[in-house]
Amino acid sequence: SQELEQSPQSLIVQEGKNLTINCTSSKTLYGLYWYKQKYGEGLIFLMMLQKGGEEKSHEKITAKLDEKKQQSSLHITASQPSHAGIYLCGADRGGSNYKLTFGKGTLLTVNP
Amino acid sequence: EADIYQTPRYLVIGTGKKITLECSQTMGHDKMYWYQQDPGMELHLIHYSYGVNSTEKGDLSSESTVSRIRTEHFPLTLESARPSHTSQYLCASSDWGGFTEAFFGQGTRLTVV
Image 1 (cartoon, each protein chain N blue to C red):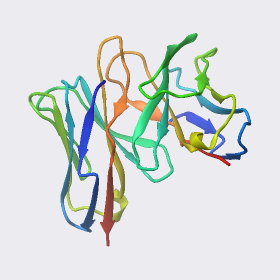
Image 2: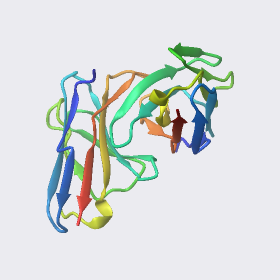
Image 3: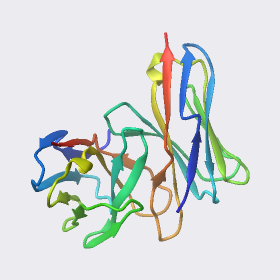
Image 4: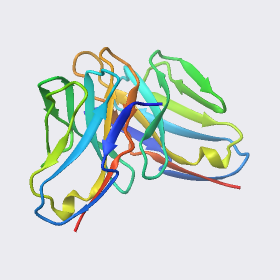
């Protein structure tokens, strides 16, 4: 199965600081998704990356898929308490056997 | 805003009871999924469907069953609930075709006592 490793498992930062979350796959990624979850709620889609080297940004969050398509990073600039939550990377195998599976998540705490 | 709904949001039920968790979407999506989420955050895929009358087991073995009689509806059933079934259950849907965004419901927090 597609194995996704996220690091760090948890992260505590001071408001205003930058941070990076990594997602590494043991296999080539055909589509890499980043989601955010508030505790006890559903997942909110952040962005999707497909092409090696692709980089996308939304407000202060930037995600990149490396050239070999086996690792992605999520970078938050000037973090705010609203960024706190669980960040999950997800991936699918591509083709007709589509199953969206996820890494273990990174719990982000932003202290004011 | 995603048009995918899960009911109930919270459920506390006794051991041995039969329960059904409801999931409905109004987006006409062919693909639907059920995930079980650990207290430690990890999401495990337990069931998925590619369309009406299609159901597949996910990566994590589950005693639950699912059905897909209508495109918009993907209920999950536990015939006899046990404390080990206590968890957060999340339903999602996505359009057909590769690499499309999956939309998630708000989840059902199930507690079996």
